[in-house]
Amino acid sequence: MSPRYAVQLFGISKHFPGVVANSNVDLNVRAGEVHALCGENGAGKSTLMKILYGMLQPDSGRIQVDGSTLRFRSPSDAIKAGIGMVHQHFMLADNLTVAENVLLGAEGLHGIGKRARRRIAELAATTRLRVDPGLPLARLGVADRQRVEILKVLYRGARVVILDEPTAVLVPQEVDELFGTVRAMRAEGYTFLFISHKLDEVRAIADTITVIRRGRCVGTVDPRTVTSRRLAEMMVGSELPDPGIREPAAAGREVLRLEGLTLLADGGRRVLDDITLSVRAGEVLGIAGVEGNGQTELVETIMGMRRAAAGRVRLGHYDLTHEPTLFRREAGIGYIPEDRTRHGLLPTQPLWANRLLGHQSRRPLVRRGILNVAAARADTERIVTEFDVRTPSVEVAAAALSGGNQQKLVVGRELAGDPHLLIASHPTRGVDVGAQALIWEEIRRARHRGLAVLLVSADLDELIGLSDSIKVMLRGRLVADADPSTVTPEQLGTAMTGAAT
Image 1: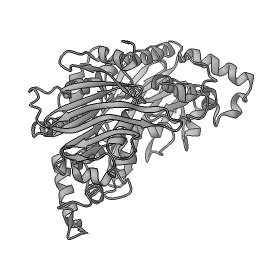
Image 2: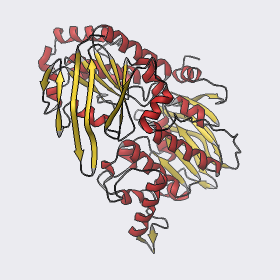
Image 3: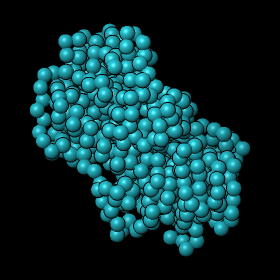
């Protein structure tokens, strides 16, 4: 690592109504290092990175890049200073090629002809992107899409790259490949700010780790000497949670049954191909698969958001195959969606209004056909207390909560209706170890009470630790079964990518 600093933040503070996001934060990032930033959801790390990237303005403090004090009024200013950000949710257009995605909005840098293609080819080698830049993005897997995002920021001149939860949807082999790319780029002098909740991965890739807690920097540590347990204690004051279920399953009656479920895309391609499975009371059935292999479509077809071309969906004695989503909810399905902001919350509405979603036709939230707002407020207060949702009031808009607190609100709401089946799609994606531990414990308790759970997750440790049995999806088909008591993440990752076939 270079002795000089690529980025320094001095006394950064940022306040929102009722919330101190950052309080006098200092951060020193050396050139050519991977500097990890860890902390709970709502700790302030994302706010800090948005300030560095020009998306937010600090209330006080200053930013230095290569020793020069700068003020970023927008991401354009940060990009001009050599800072790029790869967001957790990719910002790419499937209908464009790799090269077109890279060039979009940056046509003035190297034109759109030979010079631009030559520069893209050079940077593709740097990022280890082994595909033709003329290939349509829709053909790329998750790992290569992430490389395209990195390629985009490098094309715009970034020497400091912010990676926001970069391993959230990668299998172990893809994580290893990403880390190889990061190490190769670090050797060429690139600097990384690496935001992650996966503490073992942070220790594996980082040169330095800074922990932020409740808006303040609580320490900077050496990953070679710190343990994951100590990092967790610094972040949340508790040990690293363990997803493992201790007691064996006591599965009861069949709750969910899918028979030959088939879903067609435009053009007739089979997105789901003859899916047959069942989930019993007191059982957690895990679904493993690289993102984009039909897991999302499976969940949305069970929920009635998509119409199957063939097959049946049964919940207990109900045949739900042709029933609308509301009927399925009323029949006893709880639903934790993979994208809480799009399908799980009304961001501009208060927390008590969000408590009503999906339960607006059931007691105690409805009395004589009229919404009972007082009951909604009271039950939201209960959820806030029991699920440790950190908010000053149930009148606060959902958008004001951190991602982890939003997720705890959704989980609390979905378990509040005493469902027969819980569909949990990536229930701990993007949440910190404290929220993760709480959500895992609530799923354990619900399972122990006899709840049937269909768990879809990209976190293989979570799948192995929580599931009683696992099925692997590949290209819309169930291709393998795995025993959580014996399978390793590496073996599961191999099955997910089709390497075992």
